[in-house]
Image 1: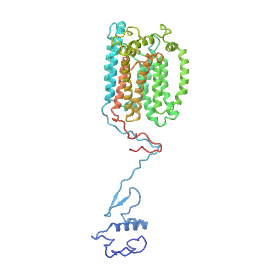
Image 2 (image 1 turned 90 degrees about the horizontal axis):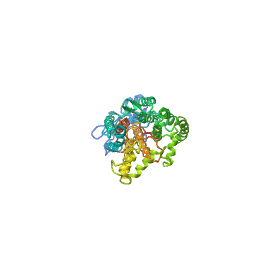
Image 3 (image 1 turned 60 degrees about the horizontal axis):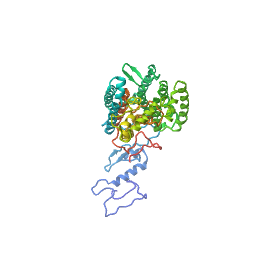
Image 4 (image 1 turned 180 degrees about the vertical axis):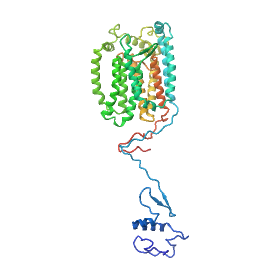
Length: 484
């Protein structure tokens, strides 16, 4: 019947037939003679109540309560719903790759900081070196001209390196490290007058492999951290694997009698490991043991001058002629500068009083000629340089690039800090150059090329610190972070 519900058309809620009201249109059909939605619902219910293949085939508009099944529309046609994919991933699954970021412009502020420091450094090299250059080379411009050529080559290398995708360094991490280690051991064949074996001499070209090893160690450790960052709290993956790569470089530095290089390699390596999540207690006990064994080895192998330098650090004016000449003349230069300095080019300590005025002790000439205000200004430039570099590391697209920039900036910041500490007698004297200022030849080229690597990473960085989740990071419950 069209005007009432019967058992043939489908069971009612109470199981009995109920007559339709006379003043209202039939619920079985609409007023226009087309089937209503109510009729479809009754047929669906009837089809499911049978529970047989015949019932399902007779009712093609059936809607099982599962995702992805057919859903009927008001005309009785079926439409397939897209399957819902769960966003929950377990910790055993491989993490998703970092989103692909297009290369953009380099960080202009960081670029201008590097160029500013390099320009001031070149001017100070000329001011500090012309007396020594005239005395040793016969020309007051020879040292600064050599340094200017190396700066020009370094700037070209910096611009070229800024266009190299940083992923290339990750692929070549092991070859870069092995080549640097081989050069460090090759330098043992070229001793100098004092017995140190730190340089490779090929005619007029002099190359110090430890400068390249600092970069190679940063690349290697960044690659290891990118692979093992979830297990950095495990002693095997967070400490032992890194020591296997750090040990050959330290052995080469000890054989070269390169104490400052060994110190910088340890600081770079341990600093990157600690930032990545290695536990602090792992560095204490091995550090003490390595320090004791290293001191015994150095004392047996002719490093007795270290005791003289330590005594000179404690009381630099006790024996100026034997051991503390360098630091005493450096302190005289710093004290002579006063607040405003004696003026650019008017230093007196650079006239063969300060040893290596254009290299390790150039900051003392800076203090004498530019005074306290000029020295503080240069220190602030280094602080801005470090902060800008760490900002690039924080905005890097993935973990490898972030740790690579961190290792490079950590190297430059610590090296500048140690050089200023040595010049001001805040720590014992050791041969640590001041980045961008000390005349170093090939060392300057390598430093500027490393700045090109940082600028290359900055091309892929987000413009500002973003609150978007890191695709490589998982929460403790195994879920991906959700967007805010």
